Length: 128
Image (cartoon, rainbow, N blue to C red; front, side):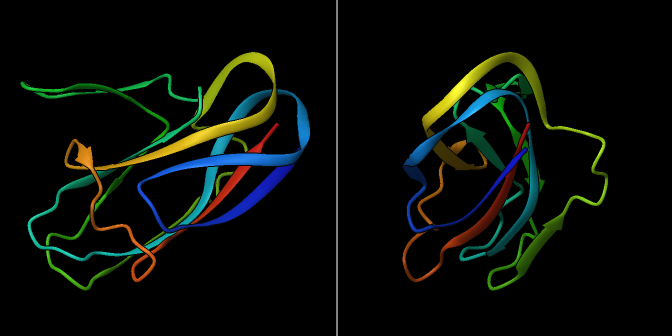
């Protein structure tokens, strides 16, 4: 079991670990904090490396994701998520060793331009 707590300043972030996390097959988002910067947003999709076996489908989109978080449509609203169900995972898949991975953040299907050093995302991940 390994946990990573991150503060992301960009919607696409490459994570390089100092040491590998071995035999990982499960991942969950344990915590999340973000302040909405624009109005009218509906949802945020998080893609964490290869841990994206969930599907989001609309009439115009078909995207893999690790976690979906529904947003308040108003600006300057804090979005907090805490997973209190420690028995469930957002992804269960093949065993892999984790050295590095990329996190991508989408708002309403587009790369989240709202994420910046002035408006970061705090994210806590759990790997088993």
